[in-house]
Amino acid sequence: MDDQKSRILVVDDEANNRKFLQQILKEYYRLSFAVNGKEALDVCRKVKPDMILLDIMMPEMDGFEACKHLKADVETADIPVIFITAMNSIEDEAAGFTAGCVDYITKPISRAIVLARINTHLMISHQKKEIELQKKKFETVNKQLEYESRRLAGIIAGTRAGTWEWNVQTGQTVFNDLWAEMLGYTLDEISPTSIETWAKFVHPDDLQESMQLLDRHFQGELDYYEFESRMQHKDGGWIWVLDRGKVIRWTDDGKPLWMLGTHQDITERKHAQVKLSESESNFRTFFESINDMIFVGNLDGKVFYTNSTVKDKLGYSPEEMLSIHILDLHQPDRRDDAEMIFNEMFQGKRTTCPLPLIAKNGNVIPVETRVW
Image (cartoon, rainbow, N blue to C red; front, side):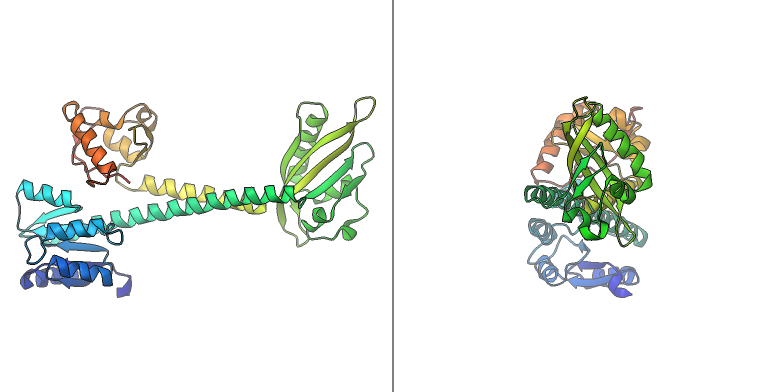
């Protein structure tokens, strides 16, 4: 099952360092190695790793430059990079994050810390990929729904809908071939037809509501009759039908006489709606299950959604967050800095904001903020 393990690329010009990391990681991950930044880029082109452990001081191309190259390439930009280095000044660490790393570990290293941070950032990376996958699924379903809407419009334009005519006073009905074919029958198989033919195919749980809507249309409360109902197919299953109609002729004493309408098969749309609802539920469950604070908003800083972790850590309810600008969560004397950093992140000039947030109770909460 080794091929299911995450692959980590270890980049260090010192053989002892590579060997030490190999001993720590070989039990849990598949490993690749490079001795400098240039070789690391070549390895990534051949076998894309799930994470890169990158030294800084190396010949030919140092770690900072290699990281910048990785982040500039669309094929490798999403690979999380952790610097493991002896360079331990604040300036060095800041330069590492500016280059695009997700973490910075200074030597000498601790086995437990290295494993914990690798696991954490691999989990974050996998969660991000899952979010992107869910987003694509949403887009696919939305495209399917848009296609279905255009398809139905085309059907109506080309008279490819099941049509019905109903003499409300006598019960006489006239259906076209597609009305019957929608249910798996030929028109001859269901003839002679009447309003009872329709009632026989409608799901019992939908029939009463349909009749109530028809009565409201007859009373003048509704301009049109429209109802989505289930109808039994010849194979025993149920299809969803969008039933629309309007009385076009009345008796002299004001009773409905002739009513015309269409049936459209909306089974696929209904199934897509169910799938979309399930996907949205799974997406929300995922957001609520992770320990990171999630804010969904626009570029103006308005927040539309927050997960439960925000309330747990900052004390603000989702309703309160709707009226709070994202910059207001920062210390007053750092809000200008926060605005500048966020603008740089939106422009792709940096990946993180290291400024802490202020909880509702005034506590300072250390965080690392990212935008997607």
